Image (cartoon, rainbow, N blue to C red; front, side, top):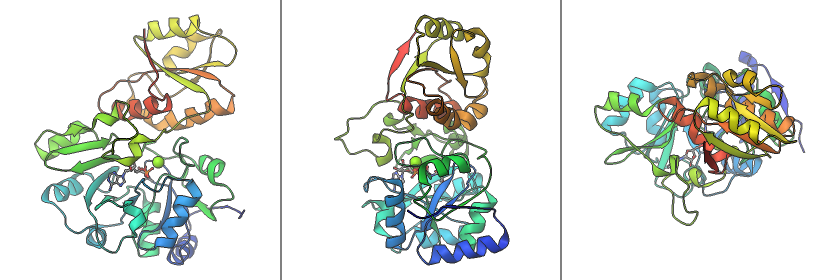
Length: 341
Ligand code: TXA
Ligand code: MG
């Protein structure tokens, strides 16, 4: 058990952290999406420490973070034209592209695949840390495998205190859900929806983009997944979560009819009044405002643990644009348990 220090990102602390990364340590850093647990992507032992700290399955590859376009050739074998166009449009930002892997990456980063997921984060602290380290950083979300991704320092500490030496304090993450993961095959395919939407990618590329079936459907555990992370149970609070689809009125009526001790609602701000006083509620953002829902979802899931919720009826979000990312995370938190009302 080591002590985990929370550090303010002063220039001196950044330089020291860069040195620690070069020595093979892991460091938790804020990004615009969620906090990441970063290590030198070229160092197999450092990368092994990430898997160990998170308890992450070895077959789930990591995203590599770069600070600028000069770093891209260090991590990939080639850059397709469409990747250049997308980088121009969305980097720095929450878009991860699956590209042919470069030879220097530690094998565990790619989990045996010939590809690597790469992104340039839109958070100055993340890019400062990459520059201070002088190497690309492999970084999954800084949570224990299976729990909601961390959007604050406290979330990181709850999961990883005593398991990592240092977390940089960057406040709350702006986006709140992880990056969009895009494979650039013959047809581009969104493997994980995020803040950069399918429609935005289609507009930039000028052609149709597919969405992997696993984004909205439960996959057979034995079939190889295009993105290994999609097959694992994710984002789950201790409570049993049930996703309730239907109008706001029908949602409220359904939850009221099912209330008993230990039951909580996970709803939008607009439903709280109608649910009270009978039903206790935790909110995640505002109806019709998918950015606020994304920003608050993971905090809300953790709060449900704090209050000791046993059964949670979650209001289903819209399934388009950024709503698709929120829906994808909630579906996994609910282990695909849906009721239509
Ligand atoms: O916003 C984010 O992407 C955050 C921050 C820290 O950058 N990172 C993140 O990493 O969410 P992680 O490890 O929690 O999720 C990475 C996802 C997983 O679902 C993984 O399977 C997929 O990306 N992935 C990574 N490399 C891949 C590859 N080569 N092929 C297919 N999927 C890949
Ligand atoms: Mg994760």
